[in-house]
Image (tube, one colour):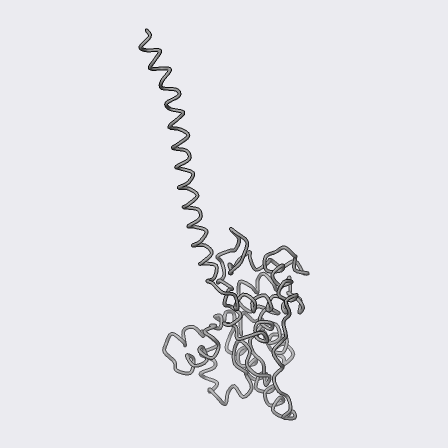
Length: 267
């Protein structure tokens, strides 16, 4: 995915930019991740279409463009973030670099199959839960998932509302390989601003992906279901408290009123 980009004049600048901004969602000849494989990209759609799409992906999708909608469906409805700070020359340079890498990948022996899906263990998921809930700190000091997200099984009253519910995010991202790559270098503007200086380590990305995988397999609703349950518990607790207060204060009122009435009659 392409976000804000500094001036790109040399191939190494494009390579560095791709690695830090695009590689979490795309490969060039390695198969699809969150987004499509970019090998032979311009053979699928011409450069003019690509320039228009990269300038504003959401606008192209909203226009009803059939190919953009097809890509969106294949990406589990994960929309590429809007591009900012790019001029035409910078986008052209990056597209040139992607095209060159695609030709290089195509010249490699045909045996290069996409990497297998990662294997997750219960220990991985437990470690990921600790990182997600903040009970264990990320190595580079990044914020835990619960600061901005809610998810099924989170601690009571925990979870932020800045980001989406993570309960089914593993499926939405396209599985373990895609989720691990995405977590290793989150490309969305908000997450990039948080984690660019506090990078998530490979073992942490693996563990968080394992935890997201475990969440996707749990029965029951997401965080919204937990919030409804908490609301019902709260309403029930308030009702019980009101009944108890009414019982207590009724007796107290009688205990005060009777001596006052008796004293008045005695006078």
